[in-house]
Length: 357
Image (cartoon, rainbow, N blue to C red; front, top):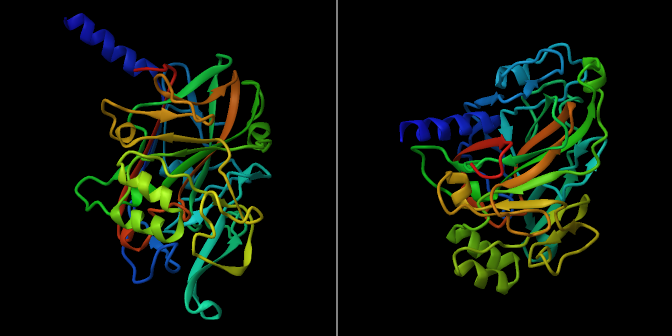
């Protein structure tokens, strides 16, 4: 019995190839969320820990390889002249369909205000915020978390899965306001070079043309989110919400909205303006149980097929692979609303070589 326990423990330790831990604390302000007015939220105490084992090495600059990197390594990266890492002091809801330009996901800021021309109805305008901190030179600003990591392995075509326990949860000991239901994280595979290549050649990789986006906690919503759906989405969505364990389709912003759009089901998932909104590219989903790391976890891949075991997110080639990591609050999500302000949420992402651990 003891040997079996040791074997199971060793298997779990061996299979863990990457662990990414990010805690984001969102403080209250006196403004509103995406659907009812413009909101920014402060961050306090960000903790990032990235560990590697089982033949995989991690680096923030493709030069200094280690088994563990932290937020200090990401923010204070050296020997990486063109690094565009941001771990901001302030977050604001943004939206995307997952389009990638110059190796980066294109996001849009949103501003929702009363529209006097439409009887005071709430209207949405957006502007592009794709230009990340490389323009300001300050890696503590920005409206979302973004940073590069480099993975090195001698194996080829290795499938990488999200560990059970990867997701977004309420920070332990804090009030549950439901903002974890509006959280997202994503990846862009920027390219690969041989393990003997120079670190500058790996850093220069920016050939990513598509993103991988994960929506955690797809099967849970707050009552305020349900009411939000009733106001801005189709009634059928609300009926599905009432069943308790349903994914609600949504569309992201894909173009700047200069002329305010009245939020009255104009951006519902099946009645939207296709020039401004669109479905999310390569969207994968995991349920609350997946975030909790317990039994009964469920995941759906980009083809909307339920995974037999863990969720495979990408495949690694032998050599050095550059991956850009993103974490944000999706403004188009029905749970991104006023009552979710002042929330404390924690991101945890782990990768494993095994499809079931």
